[in-house]
Image (cartoon, protein in one colour):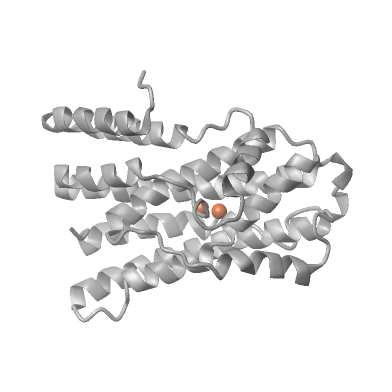
Length: 280
Ligand SMILES: [Fe+2]
Ligand SMILES: [Fe+2]
C-alpha cells in the first residue's frame, strides 16, 4: 500500500505551509535570564532529563526514515514518493531536534547539568544503543507516530500545568504546540490510508496499537521506575489516552463509511481487550 503521490504531496504541503510560519528560536525566544531554578522540584528535574532523552532520539528516527523510504529507490514512483516524504521528515526532524536541544539548553541554564560536555556525554549514551521503530510500512510508522506525538503533547500540557518555573512553562508551551501540529499530520496520513485502501489498513493499525510502547522502554536503564516518576509530575496524564484517541479516530472513520462499521468496532474491541482498556 502506497499513498498516491498527489495525496502525499497535499498532506506534506499543508504541514510545511503551517510549519514554515510556526518558528521559534531555541536560543533567543526564551527569557533565559528570568529562569528561577529554585522553583523546580527534584521530580521536575528528573522529568526534564527523561524527556530530553526521549526527544534526543531524533537522529535515530531520521536514519530509520531514510532506511525505510530511500530517495534513491530503484522504482521511480517509489523514489518520487520518498522524495516527497523527505520534505516532511526534514522539517519534522528539525523541529524534534530543536526540542531536544532546547531541553538540553534548559538543563544547562537551570543548573540541572550545568556543563555542556558532561550533558552531551550523558545524552549520547542512549543514542549509541540499537534503535528501530520496528515497522516497515508508512501506515504503521505513522500510526506509531500518531500515538507518540499525542502522548508527548498531552504530557507537556499536563506537566506545564504543574510547574511554577516561568521559563520552563514557556518552553513546554512551545513543545506542546509543535507536538500538536505533528500529531495532526500523522493522523491525516493514517486517515488518507483508510480513504485509499479501506479496511486493508485495519490490521496494520491494530498491530501497532496493541504493541504500543514509548521509545527507550527497552533500552534505557531503569526505564520503568523513571517513567512512573515522570508520569507523577504531570497529573492528569494517562498513557492510555492516546490509544483511546486512536479508537475515537477509527470510530469517526466508521461514521463516514458505515459499511466498515462492524469491522472497525470489532477491531476496537479486540484492541481494548488486548490492552486491558475499558471503553465508555
Ligand atoms: Fe518532540
Ligand atoms: Fe513531535
